[in-house]
Length: 287
Image (cartoon, one colour):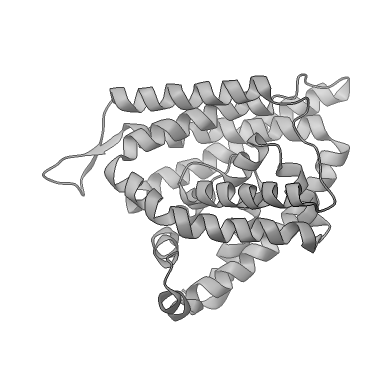
């Protein structure tokens, strides 16, 4: 791939990274860069440096996409929070068929390269129920609005942002789950979004530190889970994705014209995500 094409793909992935419910890994599959990306995330400096012509333009485009979309979403949250949340709910709902297809996808022991579909296994259903129950529990204990926006750095905030970066980066590796969604669940999405939008370097750095730590520590583990227990792993992912709708629900649909706007937003979000997921399902066998 040429540098311009890789930078363009990175820009698209950067935008994806900021939208909760849209999986960066899934889009990487669609663009045909997932395998190379996951294989370069290793604690091997020589291997990483050797692949710089691949990951550097991808990363540069990604950073540009993140800053661009962070500005847009910050404006939307500040001025039209309810319709924005409904759009995100639609986006998440539209991605559910993709994740479910991965729960049902299996292969023959004799011919592992040949994919077929079967009903969800008992273990994958158990994983789904446990993950969904966890999300419901988090929705119950979640503070009102669940989004205290931190604008100043303190030791406590530093630790929270490092943890947030690590969890989000880990989630981003798994096709079907969104790192931004994880930030939403733990109540730090708007803090990270505003920090990036305002170029608040002091708050951005601990997130980057956590992301690097999360990628290096989790990439091998995620590869192991997807290789050894893909249906069960995606069963848990399906529970998390489904439960995130409960987390995001804005306790209303707005008033007056905003009722219509919210309905349009949830339908638009669903359509956007479903169409993107449909392309991802076609590319799923490349994982």
